[in-house]
Image 1: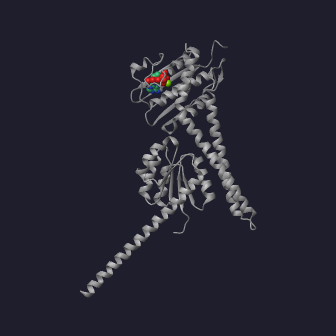
Image 2: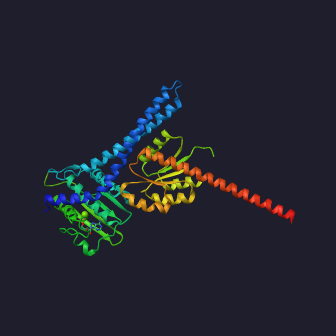
Image 3: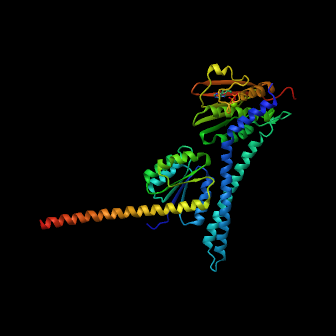
Length: 251
Length: 157
Ligand SMILES: Nc1ncnc2c1ncn2[C@@H]1O[C@H](COP(=O)(O)OP(=O)(O)O)[C@@H](O)[C@H]1O
Ligand SMILES: [Mg+2]
């Protein structure tokens, strides 16, 4: 069994690897808002000058109003970008959901993707091909950890620029989530060891070897789902996660 | 050449472009040309004169350094300014010689400093272009002098 400590350790390692990118992605909109604030004050001063002159300069006033409007638009965008990132971070604040509930896994995946994309920055393009899938009765916070670990592994397998594709589809009374990367692949020898405790090929400080152990625990043991790996050296890797729509034990 | 100086700004963040445009058009009469894609800016520079070129560093498709190198080929006398995130500072410094950078600014940038740099860059660009014109004038003057000299020699010898 995976203990709470391992759960936390793998979560922090995965989130930690995304931190620099996430900070950058929060920094940009914050910078824009700060800069805009100065400009708004200047624009208001100039607007006042234009209107308070003995011969009010309507054209100049209108130009300044136009500038003010564009700044308000940027600020709105900037705030929603920050808000969205903070929301995705929040999903990881607590990883223990006691009860299973019905979840829209496409939406949940999108939430994790936002965070991971911020973390990887422009180096990696993440593409989503979501199929129509029904609600899945699941422990959704635990599943966030599964998505997070698989996506971080995918990104870490890519040197330089690359691509990750996430697909979802219904397969009878199951949903299949597939995460493909254009990374370096996994040798057949290593594929056999993937899900065992503390197996890692990454330097200490980067790898803990806990990620896939937790993935297996959450998918197979907790949800009664299944995992499958396809990989070709030098080409890339796909992890398929199959989850039952319903949980027998909790209903 | 009496048109307002042109400032070219390239960044893959719409937010940054709008902010810079708003600030510069409030404080100056410059013509601000903004581009989300470096390729578009290259196209623009092929057909239009610019007095200063400001570019983000990390962009998909082409880095700021690659873009500024193209810009340099097209318009060597337009000073180039690089905007970088703190993390990219080292690569930016290494690139200074590569593209003959006029200045680099760290994000989040200070608007007053941006204005100062842009003003200086524009002044420099117009000095350069004036100088180029004068040199061109000089060489026309020189060749007509040579022609006169040749005629004189012919007449007297
Ligand atoms: N998408 C992938 N591409 C290539 N190798 C992978 C991928 N996912 C996992 N691996 C391999 O499996 C190992 C174990 O992964 P994991 O349990 O998440 O631990 P960690 O990421 O901390 O090393 C990794 O060190 C890596 O060698
Ligand atoms: Mg991992």
